[in-house]
Each structure stands twice: as structure tokens, then as C-alpha cells.
Image 1 (cartoon, rainbow, N blue to C red):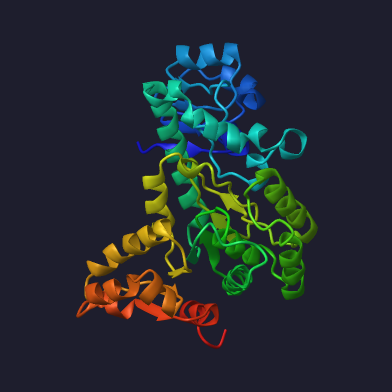
Image 2: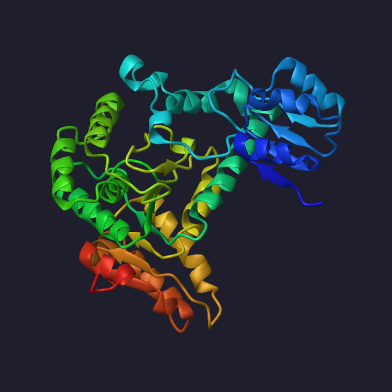
Length: 369
């Protein structure tokens, strides 16, 4: 029998009402105390796996005694490895105003990942792996059936610059066309694109850009940078339809010194940067736009280029659009290498070099949009 994940107490309660067998179910990150009386009446849990969540002592004993496999939560770690959903920005920054960034779950998780006692500990390795797999599962559930476009670019792009404003307006245009704007979830160009997707009104976006310019960078103070962004988010929160997703961030604690931006709807944050990089690019089914950036951005370009290079002749290839002719041909001459790789291959019809974000938007949503 194939396993079935149950990710809400409501779904479990509905199943219990039917009297159906719980065999081979996966109960992920549930507060089982809410249905404890009903579960205590069940006498067979063969194949049932309980992953994290909240379980009382008596219920834990009952589940194990009748065949369930129970993986408890660990209150000593600053993250939930079994979570059935992605993060909200407010969760990662909880406690920022009261205790500063070092007291937030995001910072405490990063420090946990750096601690010497977690480096060669098989249990810590297991927790990281379980966490990242749970994030991946939730990520694919979120984007199922959605058109996702990636915007890549450098973390050093400062608020208040024309490049930041251009990236924000690009994000707004892409989100307004129905795409989910997905970035690496960090500062700079990534924050700008997510901001544009978040603030869907042109005049409000201009106001937000002006307010954010007062704190151009996360250096020297993450507190000031994140605090100003949270204030903007609270002020300009748009009215969204239930279930609507306009913006997604996929950052990593591998680069934990770069804080996540707050303008996404959901955050898929990983311990493993290799896994994060692969998934960040894999989910972008509607194409990727690459703004000027440094080593990390160049790495992403060639990760995208590899499957394009090996694509079949009849494959439908999402566009890879580089923005900045002088930058990508002279400053960081990636474009000549891409053209050489693409010669006489299907990849040639997917790669484009443009000089402004307006043309990049045209390449994704069409010139008339």
C-alpha cells in the first residue's frame, strides 16, 4: 500500500471519523493532542509513522505499543526538521525587535549549524537532511501547477540605486503577469525582485523604494536592514486572494551571513547549498532572468546552461535571459562562453542577452504585456 502523508489535524480527524485504517499513513508535524482521545481508541497502527509534531507521553506509549514508528521533535534544536510547510518571513525574524537579529530563529539556526558539536555528529547530520527533505516536499507542493520564473543577481546591489529599482519593477511586472517570482531569497537584487512582486501597485512600490533607501545594505547592521524592511512590509501589505503566491525565496544557511529578505510569501531555506542551488533552478519552469552578479550568479548561469546544452532537439526550453550586454560580454565575459556552447544546439534558441530589464521582461511575458 502506498504511504499517504497527512499534514493537517483536520485531515486526520476526518479520516478518523470514517473509521478507516491508519495503516501506512505518515503523520507529519501534527499536534496529536487535539485528537488524542480518538487515537487512544485505535488498537492497530501497523506501518503508521509519526514524524515530529506534538505527542503526549501516554499517547506516545500507546502508538508505539500498537505498531507505530514515532520520530519525536527535538526541543533543543532551533528549527523543526519535520515541518510540513515552508517558512514565513515573520517566523525567521521572530524576536528581532526585542532581542536583535542574534536572537531570531534564523540566526540561531545558522549558529547551530556552525557549532563544532554539530559538524561530525551523525544525529545533527540526520536532522539537517530531514529538514531539507521536508522543505523540498513542501516546496513542490506549493509550486505545483504554477508558472515560476527565477530572477538571479548579486547580493551586493544596494537599496536606493537605479539597479535596485529596475530589479523591483521587473519583479512587479513578472508577478502581475501571473508568474511566481523566485529568487535566492537574500539581499540585493534578490530582495529587489521579491519586493516588486510583493508590492503590486506602482505608486506604492515607489514609496517603498524610497523608504528602504534609508538603510542601503545589511552591512553594518542586519537589525536596521531587516527592521526597515519589516516596517515596509507591514505598511504596504497588499490584499491578496487566499492561496495566491506571488513571490518565493530559496536561501541557504550555508551563506548564513547573508540574511533572508522579508518580501516573499514563503521561504524555502536549506542547510545544503548544493541541494538549494539545484532546486532553485529546477523549479523555474517559466525561465530565468540573470541580473549582474559575481561568483554565485555565474555558478547559477552554468548550472542552468548544462541541461540546456544536453537538451533533446524537440525539447521545450525555458529562456535563460542575461541582462547587461557590457557586463556579460566584457566585465564578466560569460556570454561568449554560452554562445560557444550553444552553437548548433537547441540551447541556442533558449539563451538571450539584453541590455535592460524591460527587454528581459518581454522575453518572459511578451512585448505586449
